[in-house]
Each structure stands twice: as structure tokens, then as C-alpha cells.
Image (cartoon, rainbow, N blue to C red; front, side):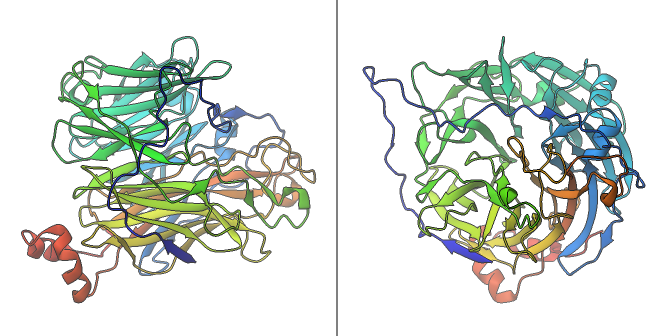
Length: 546
């Protein structure tokens, strides 16, 4: 594993795209496209094993504390909900881990990995008062409220439905609400974030083509207050395309924060430039966002990149499948966090400085007040593609990044779910806590979901479209990561007599516990925390998992 860093940037870059009233209509990036999950109907998809899950692994190493298999494509198929890709998503609560996917939802004991519940996505939404679901689910845990939030397409993909648990028990009662995200079209790729005032849901809007974006800002108390959740006081900011050509970005990600204030923040991939951007949401309250306004766009000035190409894999049997895995694009596909005055994000890029035409997971650390880059680096090694990254950071500035890696090497090139741990230094830079960890290796070296076994990959080989890292609310030094891997072939050789398909997806949850740093490292970090509270934090530092 090689970690390359750029020098910290002191100031924001100049805006790269500044259209005038006389400007011709800009050309949007062609790969920013509709991502609704695809239902497939290949025979033999029912799993014949015990629930389609491998046994949990415990105490594998000092930092990789627990790992267990989550929902698989076979699970969804057992409900008649057989989709690609899974849209891998999950969150950790006080005692449980809740996973959502396209087709099925599951709840696990977070300490043992035991699966406590498995239902179809449609059944879940029916149970909370909604008529069906169409995928693109996300879930988070609100530690301050001790309650869960889940979102999904409604029965109509123009709608976004929201479910809120009544308690911290994901197996208990829930209530829900629904709103129109994009009338007459698809409110695609809904994102989810929370701060102390609002819940943020961003959508990419499509009819037969891209029509723009919407940022939905919902008062926190409308969802987590007493009584049934509602969207009372919601403010919708829509940016039409083509229109005024304002670049508010694509796949808008609200910034998760527990810092009190009246200003929210949003990051996104630029519509027209190879860069990311940020802007503020001003005049927020926890009860009514009708007076909210958007601040100016700030381009981040990331190191030069282009959109990543397809991911490689060994594919010994079929050479045409060696580079078919869809690494998506440079959108910020998973959660963004603000902690201690810094914003942490990752996206997938093809860095132009190495000339390798390989995808990399890029982390970017920003000043939360100015959006200036404090640190930036690429996670990657020559000969491999790195993609589908996700990040989380705790109150101590400790960071976990999960991602997929694959390459042509027949021994190490299978698509693998990997991770690294970092600590934040006083200047905002990240310092590695050790080498990258293999969390789960795919069972096959030739993933071509939706294609018949023995044939070349047909169509776009969807992967992801996202992963997630979340911080344990019971012990901030524990990080829960979820990612995708390729399961066995859906044929007799893979244990599925009568099956004719290729490989199928699975998901994997891993728990990483950060190691206690050496005293000299704490001395370097203390200035980032501030002297006040240092002794308290040092006493609270426990590396135990339970």
C-alpha cells in the first residue's frame, strides 16, 4: 500500500467555472447518470446454505476486532427482490447494527454478529406505513436522540420516504412520512446527513435525462420530536439543468455534525469541473427551515484528477472481464463528517500525477469555516484499483476509511474489502496508524453480475453504489465498516444446482478498534484537541471492544 500526499493548500482556489448571462449552455459530465437499481431474473438465485451467511470471526487482530457477513443477493432473491447493485449501507447503534440493501434489510447484534432479523425492503416499509419501496436506501443512528432514521425511494421513484424509530431498538416500532422529491421524474441517489438543526437529503433529478438537483433541508425536530415524523418546515433548494447553470454540484452530501450552530454545510462533486465544492446552508433552526438560504459555492481545489475507469480483476477464465467493475465516478458517495473544526470526506479519482490510469480513494480534510484544504492524500498502490471508499471520524480525531481494492494479480487481485486507520494531527493532516487491513476477500476472481456463467460480462457491471463507516455510540474508538464483496458462482460448482448465473454479491461488516497511541504521539495531537479536556480524554481512552 502506498499513501501519497499533496502539500496542504493555504487558500481556496479560484472558481474554475463562472458563467455569464451570455454563456452557452455547459456540457454536464456524461457519466453523471441515472443509478436506479436494476432487478434481474436469472434462475437459481435461491441460496441453499444456512441463511446465506458465513460464521462471524472474532479477535482476528488487535484492531480488527470482529467481522461478520451481512445481507447477500441470495437473501433479497428469497423475497423476490433480486437487485444489482446492493447499495451497501449500514449503521451502528447502542446494541445493534442495522443494514439496508436493495431488496432486504437486516438487524444484527453488534457485539456478536448474530443476525436478529431479515425482512424484504418492501415488508419493512409496509410495516412503518408506506406502500412499498424502490431501493436507494440509507440508514443512520441519531445518538443524541437514541433513534434510527432510514430513507428510501417510495413506491414511486419521484418520492422519498423517511422512517424514524420510536426507540433505540431497531426491532421495535417505527413511524414514517413521505414527500415528493422530484415531481414527474426520479429523485435519484438520495443522500442522508444530520446536524444539530436539520436532516439533509440531496437528490439527482432525472426524467429521460439529467434535470438538476434538489437539497431538502428538514428541521430536526420535525422528524425526531414528539409524535409522528413530518416534513413540516422543510425547505427545498432546487437547481435546474439546463437553467441558470449554477454549479451546486452532483450527489449533494450534507455534512454530519454534532457541533451546535445555525449554519449547515454541504459538499458535492462539481457538475462541470474535475473538482469538488462546498457551500453553507444559513439561518437554520431545529423547528423551521423556511428562512434558510444557501451560501456561495467554494471550489476545493483538489489535486488534478479525471474520472476513474472500470476496476480490474484477475478474471483468469475470461480475459474480457478483466476490467469491467464500475467504480462509479468522483461523486462523494458516502457520508461526510465535521469534527473539531474540520470536515472529512473521501471520493474516487484517477490521479493524473502518477500516469497509471488506476482508481484511487482520495481523502480530503477541510477547514470547516473556509473549506480550505488542510490535507489530501490518495490511498492506492500500483497494480490495483481502489474504489467505493467511505470514512468516519470520532471526537478524538481518529479516522477509519473502508474501500474496495482489486487488480490483475491472480493471487491478490480479487475484489477485496479493505480498511485503514488514521489519527488527525494538530495541523489537520492524517497520520497512518498502520498498514491496510484485509477485511473480506471475494470468493471469485471474475465478478460479472447479471451475466451468464462462462460468458463475457454483459452490460454495466454495477458495484456499490456506496459503502459506509459509522462510529460506535457506546465506545467512540470502535468503527463499524460495511462493504461489498463477490460471493460464489450461482451454479452447481458454487453449490447451487440448477443455477446458471455468474457470481452474486455479498456484504460484510467489520469492527475496527483504534490502538492506544504512544505518549509522544499524544503530545503532537493534544494541540489539535486543546489542553482543556486532554487529561479527561486520556483517561477515557479504552481500546476494548465490548
